[in-house]
Length: 103
Image (cartoon, rainbow, N blue to C red; front, top):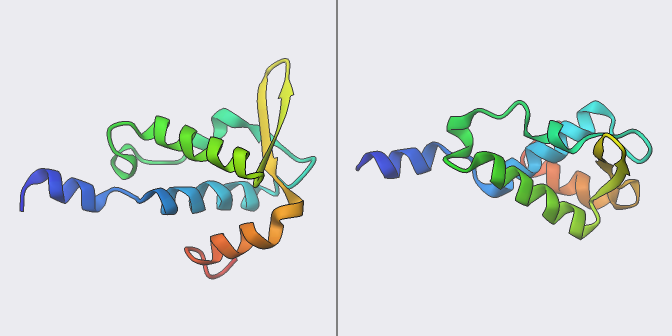
């Protein structure tokens, strides 16, 4: 076993990161009209958990959620704001429960 394989086992998978992004917004109460800055989604993750291009991974996964309709955006003069889509709450909660059963 070499360092590369050990490092890849320690990193979080895309599904785990996705669940953490959704859980973070859920825990903050960011559903519908309550929103937070898109840049805040990257906060709270350790570099070792994300790998070399961690911020880009989070950005890509969050944009995938926007395309899916799970995260809704609100453009403002001070940057893009995001929140969870209350119309998709059943699907979002089901996805989060796979990784966070207590939700």
